[in-house]
Length: 95
Image (cartoon, rainbow, N blue to C red):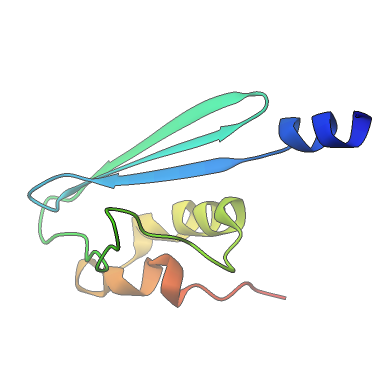
């Protein structure tokens, strides 16, 4: 029982939403201690979004916390026309 309960409390979730015009991105990161909301609006251009199956996009094989940390460190200095490079499917963890 302890193991099953403990594993539930360690779960983390990352929800990413894009506005209809594509210039707004909101990220909700939740873990057992609470939730954080991150928001980014582009003055020019739009966020490129992958095709979704059943209304969902899965970040398989990507650690959401590591990806989000990496994006927040790099997005301010990143060129607007190269935002595709910051998407999770282009993320490779630094070793």
